Structure formats: C-alpha cells, structure tokens
Image 1 (tube, helix red, strand yellow):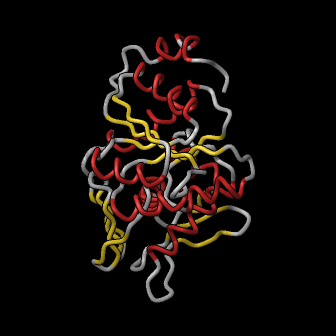
Image 2: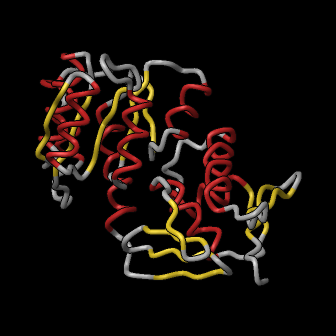
Amino acid sequence: MDAAPDQGSRVQDGFRGMEMSGTVLIVEDDTRIANWVKVYFERAGFYAEVTHDGQSGLALARNLAPDLIILDLMLPRLDGVELCKILRRESDVPIIMLTAREAHAERILGLDSGADDYIVKPFDPDEVIARAEAVLRRVKGKVQQVLTRGNITLNETTRSVSVNGEPVTLSQAQVALLSTFMRHPNQALTRDQLISLTFNHEFDGFDRAIDSQIARLRRQISVDGRQPIQTVYGVGYRFVPEDE
C-alpha cells in the first residue's frame, strides 16, 4: 500500500462534499489491510464492517445486505471466488475484488466469478474509493428504463434481465455491457468503445478482461445456439437482435 491511515487526508479532502454513503462490507484476511481500508471508507462517509474469512463474510453479507462488498481473492474457510459466485447467485450487490496477484488470469477469474471490478495490491487509497464510487454511481445513477431488443429485455432500474421471458443472472458489469450493446444494435464496437460507453473509462480495460466478460454474457443470453453478440474480426463485437 502507498499510504498509512494517518497520511490519508488527501483522500478525505478529495471526496469532501460528495454524497457518498451506505454500508460497505470488507472481507479481507489481512487484519492490517482490512482495518486500513475500513478507515478510508469511513472517512468517505460509509458505514464499514470488516470480517476476515469467507464463511463469516457470507453470513454478514446475508445479514447486512450491504451496498458494496470489497472482497479479497484469497480467503480462509471459503475463498473469494467461491464466495463471489454464491453472492452473485443470491443478489446483485456490487463486488470489487482485491488480489495480490498481477497475472491477467487471476483478474479474469475474479470477473468471471461475478465481480464488477478488481484492484491489484498494492493499491492507493484514492483508487479504492474512486472505484467504489464509480461502481455505485453506475448502479444508483440510472433513471428507470426498460430496453427490449428481440427476445431480450433489460430493466436498467432493477438490473434484471430476461431472455424469452426467462430471468438470467448477470453481474453489474455484464448488465452494463448488455445495456451498451442493446443501445447500439447492429453497430460494430471496438473494445475501447465498449469500455468508454459502458464504464466511462473507469474499467481497467485489458482486452482479455473485456473479452472474458463478454464471453460470460454470451453464455447467459444464448438460446438454442442463437447468439446475438457477434465477433467482428479485426474490430470487436456487434449486437444483432433476434428479430433484426
């Protein structure tokens, strides 16, 4: 980490005046890191709870119904990937994964498990709060809008998705990507365009990470082998609704 809590006035000053509030659950087995992150979230206006293993993290997530979860990848009793998968089956709470590993494969693993974003240790406190604020803004800042393209319906307020009338479970990032595709039907979009339109450049946009999210999204919305998200070789992707 780049700073200790008593050196963090720049974080507090940087977010002074922003309407940030809510409950954040921090699941991190390193006590020092967990308490350090807790301090910065509290300075940013959140109520923060900390736990140090996956099983207690799952119990607290169910009891607290937090607005955001900060989740370490490597945890005792129940690892972060499995915990994330369980949470994603039960709710659409935003999840930011923490990992000490720099390999792209580990970052993709976190996103594939349902995380909305990830941060690699060591990290700066500014980045943690900024990523949290960005994820929550994407979740809470949308006006009610129901999009329908072909056999897919997306309610942007509830973040619920159905295909042929059947509900499908997607992470926040995948819902955001689907919204971008549905708002730009039949248009070839590069990876950079998808990052810009979907995440306002706030996604750490490695090509493989975006590809992984799209691959997972494709699996969820495919019906009888029909796939509306097409690969445009040398360009990126195009969303072609079933009836268009």
